[in-house]
Amino acid sequence: MVQNENKKILLHSCCAICSGYPISLLKEMGYNPVVYFCNPNIDSIEEFNRRLEAQQILCKHHQVELIIEEYNPQEYLNYVSGLENEPERGKRCDKCIELRLLKTFKKAQELGIDSFTTSLVISPHKNFQKISELGLAISNQYLAIDFKKKDGFLKTNNLSKELKLYRQNYCGCKFAK
Image (cartoon, rainbow, N blue to C red; front, side):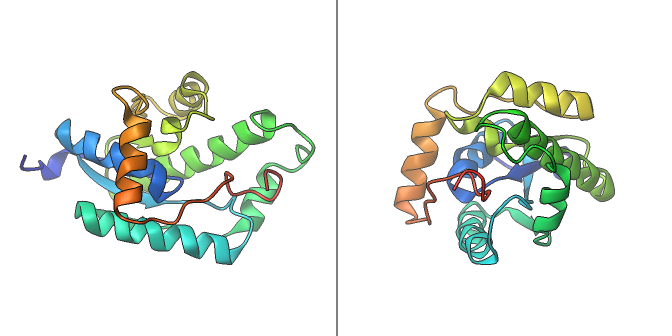
């Protein structure tokens, strides 16, 4: 399928594992996805770089543009300040997701891209409804797509295995580690 340059979408990517199938599906839907690697929540520059390297491999495989946000963990720590002792999937996680979606929306505006979404929703550990509400609260330009449907999680995992992508075992923040 030939992509329509005017139908770009900015896809926030938490990691290559989670963004493999979303990129494919967005292309099938007629979008020209631009991947935005924005993850100030990651606990170390070494982990950030491992995930970024995998993302670069995946984007090359899919032949899509990759935009890399500068690593700024202090921004994340400031944003979730006071929520350090929250449980996983609690208010700290909501704030973390909100921060990354807000940055994705701003980047989309800066680039003149009319819509944005996130690969976070493909994870069985993430709540699609909650993430969609956060995205839509930021802007009606958020496209709520449940990438888990139609075996999305299985498809994204199979692609990551095929490409031998780095596979992390935590969301990235020091609190989850």
